[in-house]
Amino acid sequence: MNEATHKLFMLIAAISFIFSGCTGTGNYGTLQRDRNLDRMFLSYQVLPDYKYYTSGGYDKPNAILGIHQDYQLVLGLWQSIPNVDSNQIKKWVNTIAPEDRGAGHGYFASYILDPEGKQVGFWYSIQKFTVIKFLEENKIEVYTPDLIQPGDEFSSDSNRTGPIILR
Image (tube, rainbow, N blue to C red; front, top):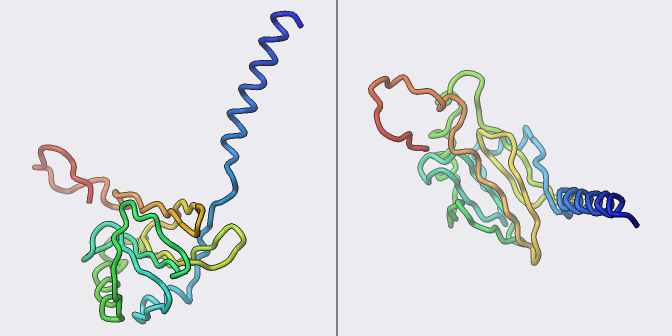
C-alpha cells in the first residue's frame, strides 16, 4: 500500500468513526403533544404515581415535569416538588398563564415517551421541545427549557446597565 492510499484509508476510517459517534445509541425519548393533558393542567388535576419537578423557579416555573415513579430523574437544574396537590397546580397554572408571555405564546402539555413509545412522564412548558435521554437503571435525563423565552429577548427598559440576568 503506497503512502497516498494509506492516508486516504486513514481519513475514511477517521470520518467513519466520527459519524458513528453522531448516530448515538437510540436511547432518546420524544414528546407527544396532547390536548387532553392541556385540559388536565387547566383543571388542576394531579396525576397519581408521578413525581413532580419544576425548572426556572418554584413560584413561576418555565416548565413542570412529571416522571412516573418507576423512573428516576437525573436532577440537573430540575427542582423536586414533593406532595403536589391541585392547589399547587392551580397556583402554577394561574401564575404561568399564556397571556403573561404575550400574543402567540403559551404553555404546551406533552407526554414523554420512551424509545419504544411507552408513556413515562409529562412536560408542561412554554418550550415545545426538549432532549430526553434514557440511561441505565431506569434513569431519565430531561433537558430544562431555555432560560430566555420568547418575548424576553428585548427589554423596554432603556436605562438597563450591567449584565443581562437570565430568568
